Image (tube, rainbow, N blue to C red; front, side, top):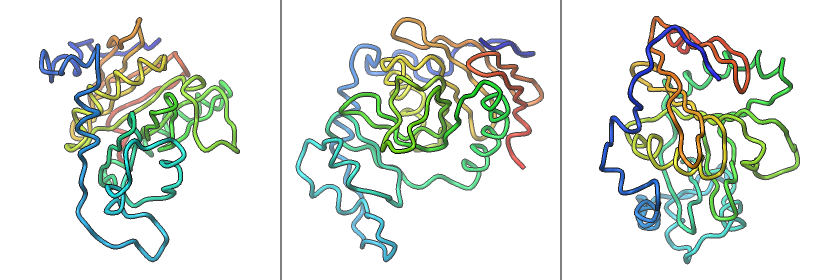
Length: 233
């Protein structure tokens, strides 16, 4: 659990979207439909051998896990969701700098607790869902695996961008909670505010909200002191 020197506020998930979350707590079908209609702009495959998403729509549905993994390294972030794909652009420099800052804050606690911190990996929630969170803290590590199974993940972290705001604040928390991942950490890019959620039943409940000038003291799943203003160089 986390202790902090800041006030707990209403959940950003509930505050930002209220009743307009398309009943995500009971069904993600609306998001699945949108994912299956993704049509990226046409361009060529790069000389580095990376698969350009322009070739993805030609694949017949549904996409399987083996189909998804066969894409290999891609320029954009591509995730598998119930036979469809979620496709987004590469992260910004600011986004990646925050990921590095967050990883640096969590790493000492992970090492002390014999946990492993991994950035942007294939996280298998089930046979039809593989997401790419910004980072995870795991209890076990299989270096030969193509994906990290949700069963060994203790915390998942996301840093929303404008084009991923609804996905990161609504859809992904729903999917991570359904996969029984205990903790979800959301970091807002512009304000650097940290929102920590703990799984309760089939949903996440906000445990803390920490803003610049305040301190988040994590005690679970690892010990860490996180100061928002120190997440950027």
